[in-house]
Each structure stands twice: as C-alpha cells, then as structure tokens.
Length: 152
Image (cartoon, rainbow, N blue to C red; front, side):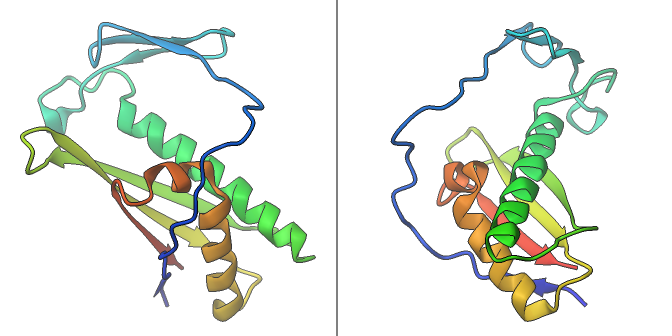
C-alpha cells in the first residue's frame, strides 16, 4: 500500500554557514561531458532518446535524480537516528521528469518513492515529512517544482 505524504511547510531554509562547496563544469551542454573539480566525476552527457538524442551518456535529470535520492535518504537516516530508530533496509528512489512549462521554457517534476520496511506507515510518514524539512534538495526545490513523495 502506498501513502502520499503531506509536504507543506515554508521555513527559511537558506544556509547560515557554507560547510562544503562542490564544483563541476559542463563542456558542450547536453551533448558533451561534465567534470568535477576534484576529478571524481568525468561523464559523457547526451540527450535521452525521448528528447531526440542518442542516449549515449547520462543526462542532467539522471544526475539530479541520483543526487536527490542520495541526499533525501541521508536526511531520512539522520532523522531516524535522532529518533533512536534503525532504518536498515530503507531506500529512496527518485524520478525526475522534464517538460515544457507555461513560460516557454522547461521545468522539472520529482517523484520520490521511499521504502521503510521496518517502520509502520504512520511513523514512516512522520519521518519522511521531517526528512523533507532537513534535506537540502527538498529545501532548494520547495515551491519551485512539483515534488511528490510516496511511501511504499
């Protein structure tokens, strides 16, 4: 059974102190490559076939989905640990969609699917709502793009 989580809250989420800065550079836009300052990332990027490309590389939406799912999962584990809970076996999957918007540009939509197999649904919903307040990706996207979170 899946349950939709209420995500309404609008606190000031800007950092008061920068603890880490990631640096990456794109070469060639969506048909080129991306690198990180520290050499950990060196990836070919390509338009996916659904957008007219050859799909012979990753794309920004996949990278965003990977980042958001990892970050949200970490926030979830942190919230669980603060509550004295073991969230072993938990996972977060992200889907990032892209499409045209009304302003003649493009927009994103995110769907997170959270699995907390050792936690009852009511507690899981509270943990997910708390993680959504902690996660920097959630804070950055709040009120900017549609983000839905489903417990499975």
